[in-house]
Amino acid sequence: MNPTLTRYRVMATVVGVLLVVLILIGVPLANFDGSSMWGFVPATPELVTEGSDPQRFGEAITTYLGVAHGWLYMIFLVTAFLLARQQRWELPFTLVILACGTIPLLSFWAERKATARARAATPDSSTAPARG
Image (spheres, helix red, strand yellow):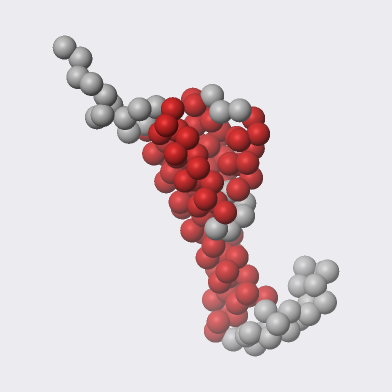
């Protein structure tokens, strides 16, 4: 298998999972206490009470996983760019793959599309005829 594709797939999966946990678990637990959020949301749903264990857990998720996701996303961008250069993808496809890494769940779709395209362009050596 192509090592660049493998690195891309690992990073896409890690970043996608962290983003889902961050957005679907961390942010609601940390911020959905009925208060305003980010200065433009007047009031959030009351799912947790401020200072409760679930709210503190959400704060920890957003603090630590948020930072980890940010750093790992930068590595993802590099691996995706390297794969795009290796495969000679056109710019629009490359930009879509890079942008989809910022959208929960859509990142998994983009990874599948990128993997399928890379595999179609590079036949697996195990299926190639033997040279003799």
